Length: 414
Ligand SMILES: Nc1ncnc2c1ncn2[C@@H]1O[C@H](COP(=O)(O)OP(=O)(O)OP(=O)(O)O)[C@@H](O)[C@H]1O
Image (tube, rainbow, N blue to C red; front, side, top):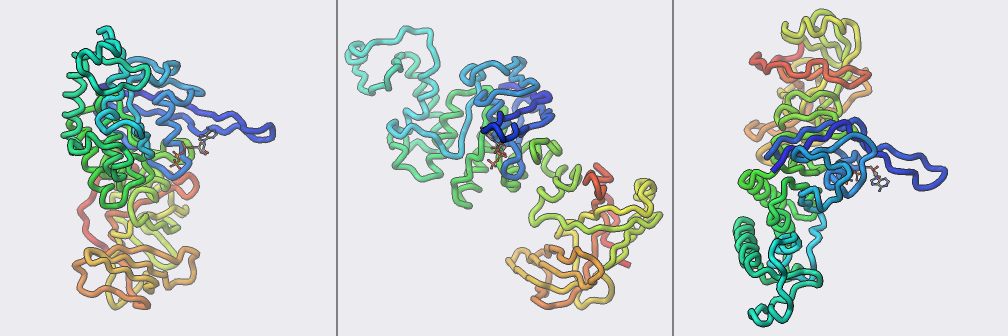
């Protein structure tokens, strides 16, 4: 087990043709994954997550910066010498080997202190299993391997499958074997690249929980790539959110949710995504939007002082909007879509005010609401003011990085 330290890493891919530009796909990457930590790299497609994982594994070369695994700088070490195990989305099992042999594969490849026995010795000892070319049989070691394989198989609940070939397994079973193969070697670090994306929703949820509990049990430092924010939120001790080759924020899941560092993180984490509205600040505490005015609690006064008369972006999550029926006044909206799922209802609503370009908002109501609004209903929204986020309209940076949650209750709009 080991700490992984990524210090100011850059990655540029050379140009593919003479008229193409070289592309820098990772910039200024600083990431410190603690010993035993489960770190998730999350971000939209093409943001550089897999490339970063491949740099750590040694499958790509680094353009700049350093990577250290367990005190050792590994920039120029080949993958084999980095003591990491990688799990891919595509399982990458050996089709001609049984589950047992797939699990044992990495263990057998490790060089041993005992001299290998020859094929006639194998025959003499009654060894019937034929090993792939270049692999040797160590009797004492084989016992240790068998013990390890059986333990891993039990943890992953694949003991009844040990004799099967990969083609006789379901997708979920194959993925468990792939995980088991990585774990069997007891590496310093697990690197996982979207290992669940080929599984159906139910199996994903189950396997997600299994990976987390296994990682806790083994205590192996893990770096896990996904573009699925539910996976990120439920699996990671911490999450690094990436966008266009740059880490936007590294924080614990709920910290990301409550205190996003910028508009990108705010929009990426949370489902359905946060609503954004452009507002003008009127000192000391009023936000003005063509459709409403909102007064913030007094602790915002100091924070907002430098922004008087400026334009900011107000962010509010769908679950932090409340609705009342019928509409008494202000922030009047009309329901464009209503999706009642039982436990919750999602509304897409249109702002009645025509004075703004921002016309659509998402609202999430919990299932205990008596009456589910329907298409065409007119409502008034209340913003839960303690959950308001404000972002710089040019840089997208959060105005307040980590305010203490306030217990001020809901506040209707003026
Ligand atoms: N070998 C390569 N040569 C040139 N460009 C590459 C190479 N590998 C990746 N890229 C580019 O680097 C960028 C990051 O790719 P990467 O696969 O790391 O993204 P990702 O965040 O893992 O995306 P996804 O979630 O779709 O897998 C992309 O623009 C991709 O086209």
